[in-house]
Amino acid sequence: MARRAQVIGVSSARPDGATSVAVALSAQFCAQARTLVVDLNPVQPELGALLDLDGPLNLHHVAHAFQLGCVRSSDLERSLSWRDGVACVAGVAHPDQGAEITTPFVSALLATASEMFEVIVLDLGRLRANLVGADAVDQLIWVVQPSPLGLAAFDRTWRVLDADAVPWMDKLAPVLNRVDEVTMSDTASYLKVQTGLAPIGTLPECRDLWRRIEYTHSLDGLLAPLEDGRRYVQTHGAGALAYRQELARLTANLPAQLEARSA
Image (cartoon, rainbow, N blue to C red; front, side, top):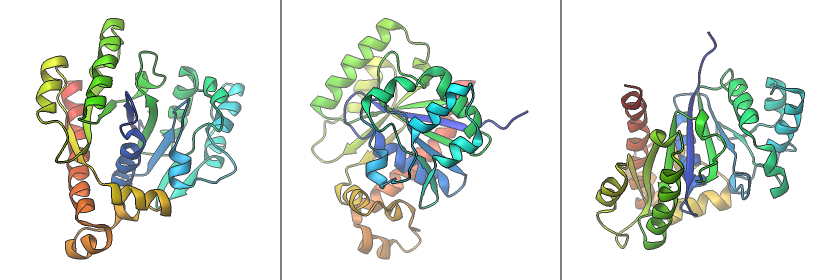
């Protein structure tokens, strides 16, 4: 039987940091497993710009090759860019190419990628009822910023998903992102009462870390060892250390979440 990679989707109802969470998870996983992150955002992909994935090919080229009926490993390999040990596939170059991201294509892509990687992280863009790729993931992380705009978008999107009774709602797991001293308190309790969804992680606001990643296109802040905490803080800031610690907790929680849902 072919090996089945663990597939994690990341989405958000508004710009709350789905791409950054997808990248952070990929960096966390790559220390233990061969990891691929794919930008499946059909409208506004940002992975390529964030990590400066300037390779000649991207997701569009893989999708174009799918016209032959399958995604070959050679097609996927040619579209890979590597950033600090993480394999990446940049998103489509133009919005009109977003129509190429279909359910059959994603299924074929994951089938081929599972033969090459142990963990696959998908940046799925905005959360919506017809979210392509949601059916194929093992866990769908809903990135939520605990702010008035973040919770308003959460409420709107949840009502749509609930009314449409999407088949993958049991895969949803909120992650609170960009949490700081002024964000709304008791957000976790609110989400649990309103939807029954309990957040599986909380990532603090860390502007300096992500500004450094955006401008250097390096994942060093997410990969540097933490044995020498003082040196790490001197290089990346105290906020980066807190972020890394919470990221490690989130990653450790994911297998338990998958096991609980399977049970």
